[in-house]
Image 1 (tube, rainbow over the protein chains, first blue to last red):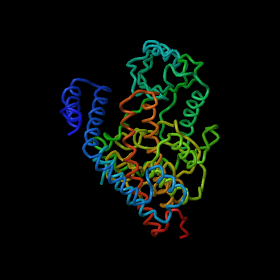
Image 2 (image 1 turned 60 degrees about the vertical axis):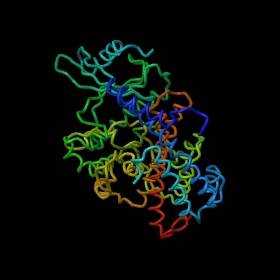
Image 3 (image 1 turned 135 degrees about the horizontal axis):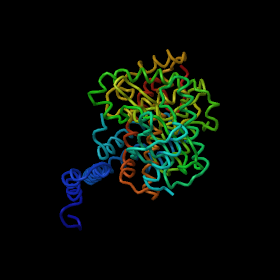
Image 4 (image 1 turned 135 degrees about the vertical axis):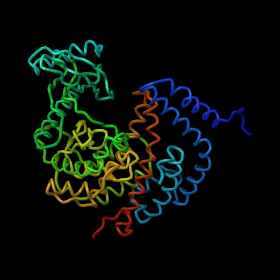
Length: 112
Length: 344
């Protein structure tokens, strides 16, 4: 149990998303309707990040340490230096999993 | 200094009088889109001989009237004239001007062409069922013609090293992305020799093409034109973000072969598939960098917008496609080390 009261943040986000889709979108037109849709999609992203994020974060750390780096900045630096040139396939494989996790939060429909 | 819609109506009537040689009444003036760099308005010009459906493009009202933005708008107009001359379908221009004109902003007035620009509608609406299978080869033929434009007609167009310019744009964002870094490494170590330097449209894709029932009716939005490798335009057209959910690689509706064969027939220049793929990867990275830039406009307070903020979370879509392309390229290169240039 954490410090905060119910509902948990993910459920608050879901309630706002539902409000935007069910109440706001049918009541407005034009650019505002589109912005309400974007806002609803953003609430869905927040909900997915809250539920999937912590485990994804751990997986990403493990893959980084498997590549022998501490964080994304260090990985970017060694890639740029050419030091990963002979491990290109391995780096692609590790990044594919991390990026697939980001897509699962931001826009699951993009994955194939 | 932006002025009201009523003022804009009077200003348009005044700047269009010379084009029609008689008094003009502006009707049904409405704004279609507005961005940081361009506004688009639709209206009808009614005069003694009839009614002409027209489009106004202008620098945003209230933007500082600097010479660079006026030059850019005039270059866009010059590009449309030259493109039309070499056979690219273009709307006819009726008037252009800079901030010394009645409109007090650089502008272009052109004829309005019927059709659709919204990608999702082009891919799904029943009325474009005959257009869809034609689009890829039409784009190939149009690009073949477009790349014969005389660079002298668009004097001052940017002439930069495409990869260095994109790298600089990315670094300026301050964002860290190992995936984009990996792509930059591949792009730098597998860079094809540039065969030709031509006028590149720079944003040739659904969204900037008017599609009617028989296919591509006009090429719009010359804002990003520059000099460069012709394959840049072909690669950009194949980027997955411009497929709008369609299965096919070219604009979601056509095959690589349709695009490349039509391009080869029109231009007389062979398309090296590996080079085109390099530019597709480049385009995917470029769209990723643009996602970051859009989100930064919101984050850094230049333009408060939930839409811009949300685009930041689309970077991972481009990273996803970037890794798919890198895997494909690595396999095609026979699993050679990522940083080595192939010798085959």
